[in-house]
Image 1 (cartoon, rainbow, N blue to C red):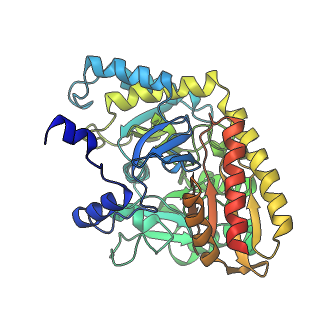
Image 2 (cartoon, rainbow, N blue to C red; image 1 turned 60 degrees about the horizontal axis):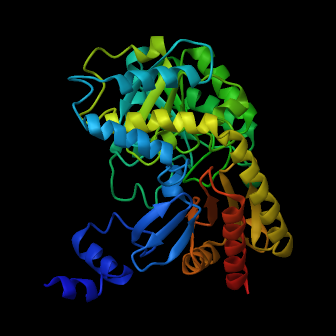
Length: 438
């Protein structure tokens, strides 16, 4: 093809790319919308057809600092000039050490900390379980209904949501038990959940044989339910009483997303181990386990790691992410974003009380609304959720759904988003909702 022909040739659009994707990629790796990204900047995304979208998903809370933040891009480009990979377990590098020092310093609590790096959130959870079992010499792990911890076999065993994650992938690892997660909107109280944990100690796993309890301080895929402070304190008390490792999964809720650097800070507890990923490196693959030094050092050398563990590019990006959070006061910004969403969504709820059952906006920029029929919490409205989701994409807004019944909208805008784009995005969602609620 000549240069002139190349200039006039029609480039593939979204529909063609979707057809090619379905022919080339496994169907299990699905996508929400046939929207193929050409470029992204800040809180805006443009597709291959030139359409512009406001991004309220940020790659599932990965780009907390927005797309292509200039300080992060500068740090990554400087690292690329030096080297892209050597393997931290073969010939390590300063950025990994510097990041470990930084994470140890900002992790909640006064105990001495250590860190280790991997590539994905699921790997972080896998390694946290390994560390807990190595430290305690025990086997049992307690997780919670509705929790999401990854897609590997161990993390699927911990995950408390079948569709679409667990269906037909078993058998899963044993020695895992689950208890109800407190959801006041669904009449599951803190007392109910803690009593269920206590019952597990009587019926399924002796506390002396329980290595770890793992919990999200705000459930992600399960519906954006925040863990009440008294619940996390109750788990901390039980772990202290029986020598159980408390693992707080901050993969989606960490790095200023909730108005605290880490969501568990709301409860004033110190995790034994904390899993991190997503917002850690501003769009580059990196995950970590951070925890009390005496626990982290339980595995022998060689027991932890991976070929791409602690990518030097990811580490450079993560160091810059921490600077951006501090320099731009993103924890305060997250609270502001949550307040703006809360006001707008409560106004919408007042007009549609039969359809909007619950609003969860008290954890910064980790916001959700739950759609129902007839104002009844026990009548999830997945049909309306799907229709509004589709309409949002048609109107130029990227949003995500979640929840055990697929009836929850979750909003995860970049913490760097301007008020103008935030207002525009909220108005677009409101219009899409009204269109579909008629």
